[in-house]
Length: 402
Image 1 (cartoon, helix red, strand yellow):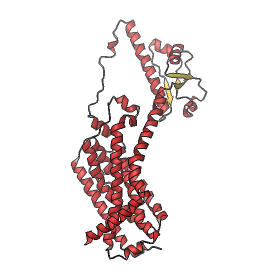
Image 2 (cartoon, helix red, strand yellow; image 1 turned 120 degrees about the vertical axis):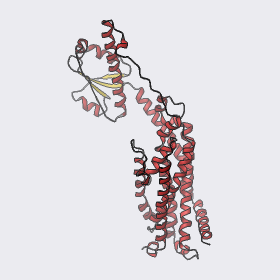
Image 3 (cartoon, helix red, strand yellow; image 1 turned 180 degrees about the vertical axis):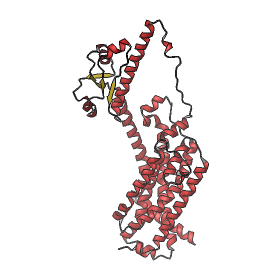
Image 4 (cartoon, one colour; image 1 turned 45 degrees about the vertical axis):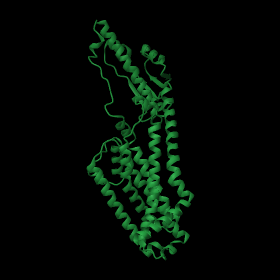
C-alpha cells in the first residue's frame, strides 16, 4: 500500500512537471543543446584567440644594447618579433601591455660574448598573461639559438665538432594510451559540469514541489489526502531525482558526443601540439561516471527538497537554495587541482570524491576500494538527507510557517 501511494504521488508530480515548459527546458533542452553549443562556441573562440595571439609578432622593448648592434639587428630581423621603443619606465610598458616583453642588455654584452666572458640578459615579462608568455617564449628561443650558434663558432675555431657539447639527444614520446590522455585532459571538467547541471536540474522541481505548492495553496489539499506523509515526501523526492537524473543523462550523452566528435576543436591548438589524432575516453569510464553520479543525484534531490521546504514561496526558496551552488562548486573545482589525488580520506568528502573518482575512471584507472567507499558514503549521506526531509515534512511549523 505504501509503495502504491508513492507511485501514485510520483506519477502525478512527474506529469505536472512535464507540463511545465520551464521544467522541460531545464531538464532536456539546456543539457542536450545549450551546453554542447556553449562548449563548441567557447572552444572555437578560445582556439581562434590563442592562434591569433601566437601568430602576431611579439612587441619587444629593448633596454640598452647600444653597444651590441649585431644582436639588436638580429632581433629586429626576426619576423616573430617586433621591436618597439623602450620608455624610461619599461616595466610599466609591460604591465600596461604596450609591450609583451622588455629585454634588458648588460653593458658590453656583445663584446663580453665575443670574449667568452659570462653575461646575463634579463627578460621582463607579465607573469600569467598569455601574450607576454608567448613573447618571452619567442625571446628565449631567439637567445637559445644565438647561444648555440656562438658555441658552434667557438668550437669550429678550435677545430672541434659541435657534437662535443651535445653528446646525446632527447626525444619525447607519449607512453599513455589515448584514453588515459583524454581522461587526464577532460576528467576534471566533465564531472564538474555534470555535478553542476545535476544540481540545477533538481533545483527547480524541488522548489516547485515544496515552496511552489505553498505559494499556490495546493499544499493543504495534498495533505488532506489519505496518503501518508512519508509516501508524499518519497513521491516528491523521486520526481526531483528523476529530473536530476534526466538532466545528468542528457548532459553526459551530449558531452560525450561533443568531446569525442570535436575534442581537437575544443582543446584548440594544444591538441595539435601533442600530435594526437583524436581525443579518446574510456567507454567503461563513461558508464562508471553515470553509476557514481547516482548517489550524488539522490543526495542533491534530498537536500534541495529539505531546504526548499522551509521557504514560503518561490523567491524565498531561491534565496535559500542559490548559496548551495557555491557549496558544490568549490569541492568540484578542488578536484581539478594538480596534486589532489584520490585516497581513503578524500573518498569521504562529498562532491570532491566524485570529481576525483570520475577523473580516474575516464582515464581507465579503477581504484575499487575507494570507489566502493565513495558510493557507500554518498548513499549514507543521501539517506540521512532524505530522512531529514521526511522529518521536516511531518512538522506543521515548517509546512505552514508564517
